[in-house]
Amino acid sequence: MCSCEEVKSEKEKDMAVSAPTSKFDIVILGASGFTGKHVLREALKFLTNFNSIAIAGRDTSKLAQTLNWAARPNPPPSIPILAADTADAASLRALCDRARILLNCVGPFRRHGAPVVAACVAAGCDYLDITGETEFMERMEREHHVQAVKNGALVVSACGFDSVPAEMGFLFHSRQWVGPARPNRVEAYLGLESERRIVGNFGTFESAVMAVKDLKEIEQRRVIRVKPKIPGPPPKGEIIEHQKKIGMWGVTLPSADATLVGRTLSTLTESPDGLPGMNESEEMVEKRKAFWSSVKPAHFGVKLGSKSLLHMFGFIMIGMLIGVLGRFSFGRWLLLKYPSIFTFGGFSKNGPSEEEIASASFKMWFIGDGFSNERLAAEGKKKPDMEIITRVMGPEMGYVSTPIILIQCALILHSQRENLPKGGVYTPGIVFGATDLQERLQQNGISFHVISKSSLST
Image 1 (cartoon, rainbow, N blue to C red):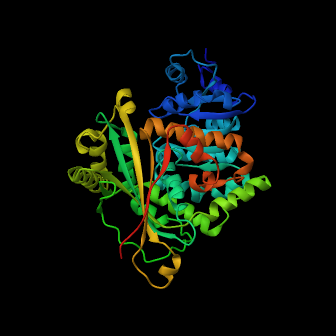
Image 2: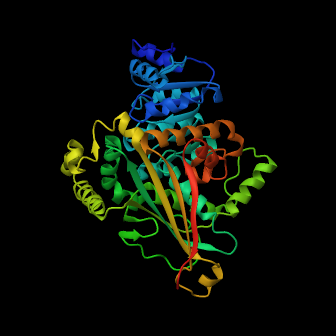
């Protein structure tokens, strides 16, 4: 049976969370939520890899029910259940004092995430989450990076489908440009496949709607970053493009993926050998330097792909509705009140069924154009003469791939902490790029492939 720390009064609640005990290796906050329960189920597969696990949230009885669900068909393991509320700063600080790594699954993060990050940084507790909300991530970097470095708290957002497949996929692709070859532009095409029509989670839709509201603030407060040197002219990307070699149409997807890859490349420009670990071995130092020396920067973008041009117009229509209505409070109310209507059934407040999740998968194709020799670009050759296509593929994005990715990042953070930066607010790419994350993902169903390398006609 689980060891639940039930709360019958406010005083008992404080005592339940702050009782002095040894620290837990990981604490999953929001384990009873849409995605959190799947993260818990994935974590239970690796119980022997962690010395101790706990789950936390507002409703301990609901967490106990979730633990039963996640453990099926086995009996639930003896995992402490802790009371904590994102609206209660004291409970969060007490929770972080008991955690080495906190996995935050409580969204939307723009509304609930900031107090959790603040508590982790204050306690020197490492933090991972599954957000794809650009405004939240950039705000956390501005507000907490300096103190996180000082306190030894490593804060890494977007450790789920947003945005590890894009980041690790870009790094994998970049390293295929060997010798004098250099990429100029890499465009990722995201294709979703399912035997059934899968319905998206309402929380994801809400984050997209609120992101429209935040666009102006993001641009006004965006951190000015060092840009990497990329051979050749800036690409002229089209909103809609067709890639014959993969048989897909693509429409520009305004996601966090491109922003995070840009942040990783900016950090790499300032630190060409990557970020040093807090207590690395000489072997790891050499491995890190060798990895990052093989990464070559490129302009990066993401498109939502489909084999049907008709689907492209559907995607554009949904994007226009969100883009227009999301600017106004009444429009946002309409979108959030009737998500199924405005997305033609693509999102609902109920989310997908277990059958829909099991039938779904994703493929992310990386189409890279560049130069067989960077000297060609230096001599003024404007058209790339080389193309490389790679692919990342795996199971359903939000409830299968995301938990796999988050738990593998947590395992690396747990077992390889001395090889990672002491603290700071960073992207998953710059923190986990030189580790064995790619190999771990491949062992757990998310694969990386080189599809083709070819010359382009001039």
